[in-house]
Image (cartoon, rainbow, N blue to C red; front, side, top):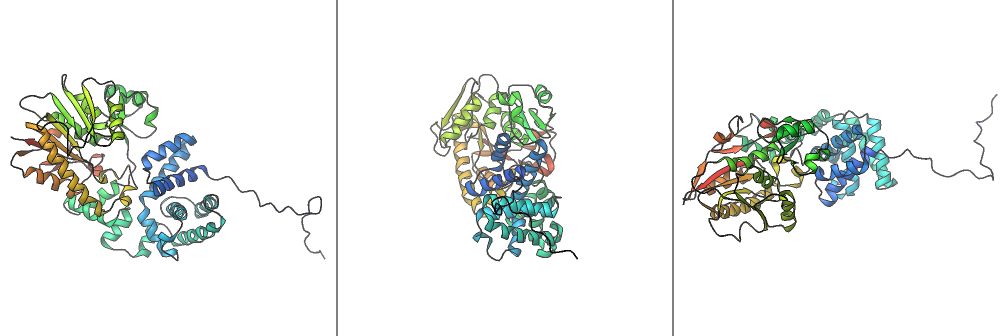
Length: 464
């Protein structure tokens, strides 16, 4: 008959080793994804600026870098749905949780709901990360909650459990706040394209380049990209770091959405009667559209670029460095230092909600709220009124926003068009070959239609 199991021999000196077992090293990819979420929630950082910086600093393998991008952007984009699930499982308001714990729960829940990560791996790696970031006490909560998430199934199963209907269900299924669902329906004029437009906001966007001081053909060959379908200066990349492209590093090319390029080109394409020697970009920072205007203007055209924020004006100076016959001013477009009627063409890329670029800035959908729209529309209206005063009779103003929201697009343009010294110029004829761009007399690009940001443009001619 065998005796009781023998205990391991004690170390020399008669004392048992009480050191905790050695833990596996933290997963570098998941730690980087957490650091992106932490930067967004703690410092209101923009993920599309923070993530590339972290990837360069940490020199992750391409496969890990792709996973970080998918995980960080996905968890930020899906925040509303993730929080709806977590609210069912946490015994206190989510706002009462340690901010770091909530970000970690979102990170783990996203892996369980939307990624094909085995439950044990998603839970274990998130618990390890919690121990390292917050402490052992919080890891118990994270472990318990994530196990409940895993038991509930994937996103489709959880949507059934949440029991949402109508716009609420569509919002949860497409990772948008309900107010944006309603705003997109109004902008599109109904439900026919609504789900496609919302889902397009969730797709990973291509990188778009603009060829400013290099031919598009040369840029496409150098970058390995393909010419864009709409702008004669655009090149689209399937992926990779555009900062590694020499023309981008040297300023001959830049990263710029093809829709943004078209908005600037529309101003340059409008036929004018009379002089055409002075152009103005009135809200120019950070300088992308000013850089393109400088590249496409005819010889002899003087370009003035202004921004009321000194640091943004400095960015514009960097973009326009080396260009002849340009000036950069720190100036508020509502109270400009130039005389009325000083310019032949004026670009007003007005401050807006940025809802047209949700593919590139996934956190903006949760950072913005319906209360942000009204004050911005008032600012846009004041800036457009001043821009129309800044252009000479016969000159043209291009009013541009990166948003499809009616209140900061059609409503602002219609108010300006009601002036007795303004004519509206139709946009669609100047975008020949670009389908489904017409929005009344104005122009509207959409991610689901054009593969661009949702840029709006109105062309207004001052008549007297």
